[in-house]
Amino acid sequence: MTIRVDAPAVPPAARSPVAWEFFAGGGLAGLGLAGFRVGLANDIDAMKAAAYRANHPDVPLHLDDVWSLSAADLPGRPDLCWASSPCQDLSLAGARGGLQATRSGAFWGFWQLIRQLDADGRAPPVIVVENVAGLLSSAGGADFAAVCQAMVDAGYRVGALELDAALWLPQSRPRLFIVAMRGVAGPTVPAPVAPFHSRRLVAAQARLPRAVRAAWVWWALAVPARRNGDLSAVLEPDAAVDWFDADRTGTLLALCAPLHRIQLDRALASGVRQVGAGYRRVRTEGPRKVQRLELRFDGLAGCLRTPAGGSSRQYVVVCDDGRIRARRLTGREAARLMGVDDTYALPAGEGAALKLMGDAVAVPVVRALADGLLRPALSGGD
Ligand SMILES: C[S@@+](CC[C@H](N)C(=O)[O-])C[C@H]1O[C@@H](n2cnc3c(N)ncnc32)[C@H](O)[C@@H]1O
Image (cartoon, rainbow, N blue to C red; front, side, top):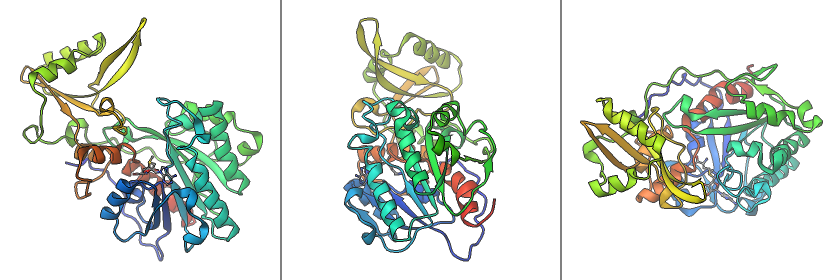
């Protein structure tokens, strides 16, 4: 089952605007860019590229390091360049080497291409950079300032929004979207508005250099109608999935921190079916580091992540009929949590499918930006 996302019909256009998708992964940004034609994609990862080609056979994909591309490899002039650049060095959970580190530094490879396109008279009027909210604070805010400064130096007006996929889908997934425009204008508001101009975004904007703030805009975006389903709506039928046996379930649940155990017992005592999601995490308790299972029963999955190690794979815990069952979240369920419908061809292995989805951008969030901000700007509406 897929969570229904009400999307307004895309108005017919004389010519669909063209989007180029960088750091394309499985192409979820392109899936959300309603009303655009994706004209080109790039990713360095062979597994991702195979998934991309399986699902977007008509889009020319450059399987290459973005640093090794040049404008001469990219024919035409895009209306939009979308860059979901790597986040590992910016994530609050990581070592935070920042935008100078090897992985997240790939943003500058993308930016080098934008500069080359500009020199050719082919720079796009709209650029979107998607990343984790950690970009706002990494290197004490210097990374965020550097990205915005680069855009402003190239003549763009710049603004950002923090969008949590939980408004559209049953997954907590806050992400930062920096949107730059030149020669076109999207809808704006004169001052920050919650929830998309979050407190940490407002604080980071206030720390930007004066010249960047002078070119700053607060993009306007409507808050969507309430989402129409919770975590249980995306799960496979109980009979179709593998559940842990009693020993494995017991070992997993024994990792619950006391407060999470109380939540679990309450869910069990409620007498109605309750679906929770959880991750194993290492926590420091006094002098010791301890493995803990952290559960939530608020109808949301935790933020999907790349399953680099077993501990970052999400668990599903179901209480009903006086018993507790536990299992892994499947790749197909992860895809639904990203707003991808079941016609999407996932890689054969569960690990690859979970990696593909854990790295991706949530489709309805991109669609909301496309409908509310990007297409209106490119069609001259305000
Ligand atoms: C955060 S993911 C973006 C996923 C994509 N938005 C999606 O929805 O599936 C970052 C992507 O950047 C790719 N990548 C990392 N370094 C790269 C580089 N130097 N050149 C090109 N792609 C790179 C990774 O393989 C990964 O697919």
